Image (tube, rainbow, N blue to C red; front, side, top):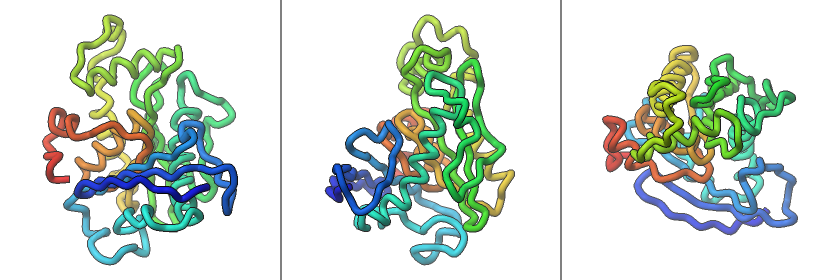
Length: 249
């Protein structure tokens, strides 16, 4: 893997890429969505809870800041990011939809437990998985991106994308209730449920594309952190759909 970075920073939102080369110091298989370049966004909302208040890293939970990833060597970078990339991949392959693989229905990354809490409506709707590492008090909520296939979940995702964007809904969106298509509300619900069920766990949010947008919006609302892949701009969603001021995160 190469280490070429393109970094742009605005307040607490850092985006950069690592270019994957044909050879490197270690083999780190990444999900298909990573493509030839891995675009990673780090999102850290202001007003974080006290567990992150002091020091660059806490004994239990996630590092106080994720910006170290912009300068570490390739091994350290991929050691940290690969579990989150795999969890994001599982949101596609372990949930109902065009990419579902039965063999991965209960898959997890080595060293992590699959949480019992998940969102996986068979007929279409917001998809999310939870992962736990009790030894470090770390938890991850991973959100799936848009299904681009032909399964019912693909049509529901298209409708949810339009709703988040404030665009007119396609004519077939009446097949789902407004509650089902409100992916942001459902994402906030599962994140709140995870926090209630595991009060001693510190949560990080991740996802790809639409899932990345949900992860960053949830992180902003909850005053937490997100590490995301190919995230769309989140400011308009925060401004139009939440009480969180995008200028304050």
